[in-house]
Image 1 (cartoon, helix red, strand yellow):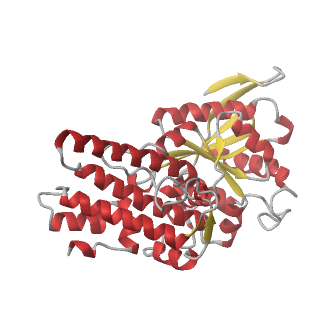
Image 2 (tube, one colour; image 1 turned 45 degrees about the horizontal axis):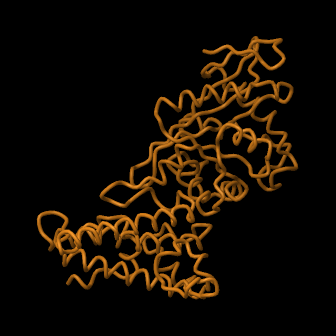
Image 3 (spheres, one colour; image 1 turned 180 degrees about the horizontal axis):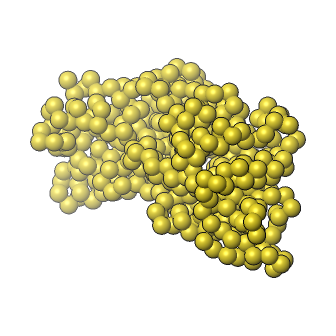
Length: 382
């Protein structure tokens, strides 16, 4: 429990964890403060005078989704609320994260430091796990966005990344039927929302694991930022191989393998950029469908590719070059396959042999090779 003075110094505010007895007060604060959204957010997202949040929705968020609320109390009355939600995610799907949820202050008590006090408490709690912190709000509520930006959060500008974050962390079937991303209500909400992230998120998602180039999925990171990271890594592995060749006279198999993974990830990124609404990208054969759907799209200028320093080849400045998505994908898959073949010929293996164990690793084991696995396969190993 924490006590702080509000801006005018007239009253003390107590910040404490909510109890079951606070349910009605939490609901009241949310619905009263949410009136600020009337006429601002899309009309089909909330139709007043119906409550902005229903009893069932709040109960689902607490009992099923696991949101813990903290409240700001003045005297006997609750004047502000803010929720914190821990989302434990499997390693291959992305980093576990802390979400800030349902941050509201009664209208009469706004601009007095109550939201700041609640936010400070929740950021202190989040620091215990050392997880990145994510916040979602309506993109039309510029006052809320400014509040978070002043506290070090940055909005995700890539729409496809933002939608994938919402699906992975906010709206999932395991968080209750009311959080099903397939529902019309959640679809409207996702389209009208923005996600903001702290620096830990950027650090986590742009850090690649040494010896295995897999970072967190491309769907969770700005495609342009990750494309630049892929290029830097690719050139680093090529340099490793060149040095190994000069010193030992033979190629470095792990360098070729990691270069192959980077080519495959570059294909994945280029296709995902086109699938903003994630219509195909998370399906089992999603990249095949994406290539069928977007293969004839033309990109003008090498600099407009996600990873412009990787294949395809271009003219001297590349400014006026035109590439279809199919050309980009095929040239990068060719490079990926060549690097894999060189890795195998140089002795790369998974398990005790280069035979069945390696074939199984390529077929199902490495998420970095998902694009080449779907679009080309590994028939050359037969």
